[in-house]
Length: 465
Image (cartoon, rainbow, N blue to C red; front, side, top):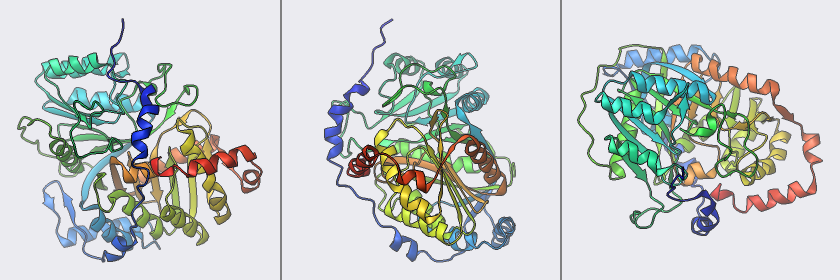
């Protein structure tokens, strides 16, 4: 059967001319914003609202005891709060989800358990399959049960999604909002074609949320389609990625991020649904949800990450699919390594963006000389976005370590304070490091001249990557 598509990814050469119009954009400095922040009492909320000063102090003291000798919490959290404009939320249970099959299974379970509503916001939104069941069939079944379903998808990221899939959902009463349509007849004024919704959010009944790097994209399935989005090469066997399942009051913060986006994009009014009571204390993790917007004067997540890197005392273990660091990020990583922090980077050995890979390679020499350890994953495609600092501050989300996540994309990330999540992420990092190739300074200096020339070319367009 012929599948009708709204647009083709082969149109990228046509779009590049429009994208180049934003090429002059540059990463804003964050030093002043960080310096303006002062050490102030932390705002910590729970299932029933703001906690008292004594309760907040007890939580922070418990976290500080998990990293003795580190002043990360004291120095960093107040700055983070000022920059992120979001509270810390106590009493959450979290679980790290690895790769497509396990994450899809958790997503389908959350949707299947929903009794009132499901919110989905994805850069790539396709009719994925889990254990023989397709997303379309599951969502249609939930609509028949009276569950409200609302979807935001990015027009470019989902450019290959068959329109029949979306039409079937709309006909069943699923509320669907297309973010920044590429079709000029549907697009409004006031946004650049470069501004994309890169978020990955699932929320079920305000009780369970899943966020991270995993798209609702068929390439994650055990036997993906032959095609690969924006690929320069063959389709890898496995996409390695990381998501975080959150249960507890932090889900409501993530829900606000979704609903604010829905309203800002002119989505139709959603049905009024009374929120179910959130369990008082399902877990011990403290979570801060950071929703970043392309219109932010100071990029919230970026400033938060730079602050965290600068305040690291013991460890920085960073995993990213696209390593196109800014000057501030490079400086923070190099300074941390030189002051004795164990800095390790898990980066892709191959990528669907050869230019991003080349830009990252151009920075290896300075990082290795500073003492940063670099690992390249060889098995499949690395798409994860996570960091662990000092064994207690972790982040998982949609933001890459690149310029595009700072300048153009709307992103969402979860900062987690707690040993449990940090330990889970550390285990994933260690597992990948065991099979990855460690890059050494000696071999890097001897790489072919052709690679060095490609890196110089890639640097010229890094603001678009």
